Image 1: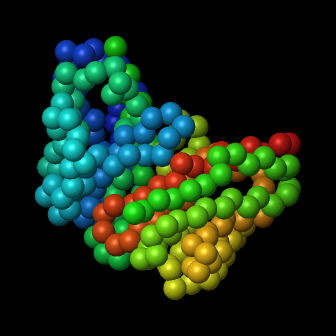
Image 2: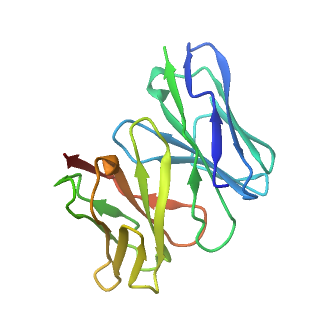
Length: 113
Length: 110
């Protein structure tokens, strides 16, 4: 099973709302990632968790707050977002070993109004 | 620094072979990847090659690596309309950070 699932598929939120994106994998991977992807651009790394600990934060604004409750789950809490935060948010997972090949979920299409 | 470059567009006829090219700059790259992204979907890992290999074949896909020129290519044999997508080349030098190219948009004409 090489599936990473993400919910919701689509999300529309106002700038004062609080919402969360969810990601789940059952491949036994111990690294999980959040990416942001704008239209016609490659994905940009936001956060990496390794063994449920935050390993990388790519200077992401504090209105994005990641959480890794266990080795299978990854959340991204959103608060006071701006219209320019509208994008496709992708979750990925990988083994923590040579190669680090990442498996991606289908993404959450976020629109901030 | 690390950089991955790809041409932006490729158009082929159905049944022909497609060749998507990529160049990378980091000579310490250990793994090189090809991902496929269809409209509105996530990235699908197609194949990858370790830097001590020259070639890898997987059904219709052939990856060639020229380490001296830092050039990677993906050949899709018998291209079908379902192969229309964006193809990302990516490199990993060890660790969590993977560097993605800008993506090549493949158009397959019936």
